[in-house]
Length: 238
Image (cartoon, rainbow, N blue to C red; front, top):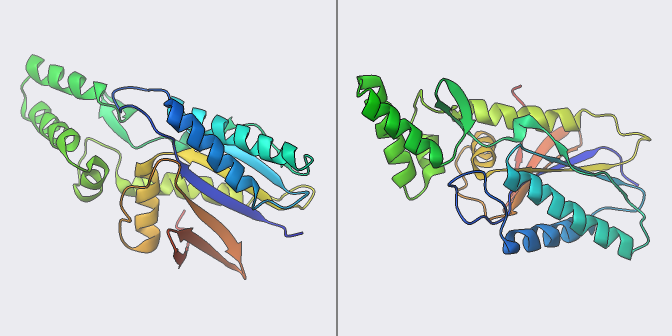
């Protein structure tokens, strides 16, 4: 039996929109459970699976769906794996934007707040903020726009990548007890995934599918990131 920790960072399941903190669709729940069943197949008897998720409802429900899928798959083979229920990790939150002096996870409803602030006070600052939000929400790839357009109005890609790095490093540095291999499945969002992968791979890999994931694992004294057939060594900067 292997020892150590393997970390999976998963995009949340399908949702109907990004208007607000919405729930998964029925399809989102189905695929999340299916991915959980698939991940259970790579876990050996005696190992452990843990789940972490960001604060958004879609991230939490994705973790819950994967947890159900894992539990069902493990029960079908005799319960030979320890499965720990999902837990919140704030650093897995989506990229955030400044709204009313606070960082808030990106949602379309804040576009209305920014527009209202401009109409109340059409200052150059509010005009610039509204121009960014207009361009961001009208882009064919809003996350790609954010990655390539520096702005003081949103959390930077570098800051978001650093959050993901902290989460992953925290998990890799855990000492498994009783010295068994652990699989940590983290439900997050496309923006944190793309920011982290861009830093590791040297380029933006594009939008991940719902419930798609990358894997981080230490082998032979090095840390490796695997995504869509690419394998890259990762030197954590945190």
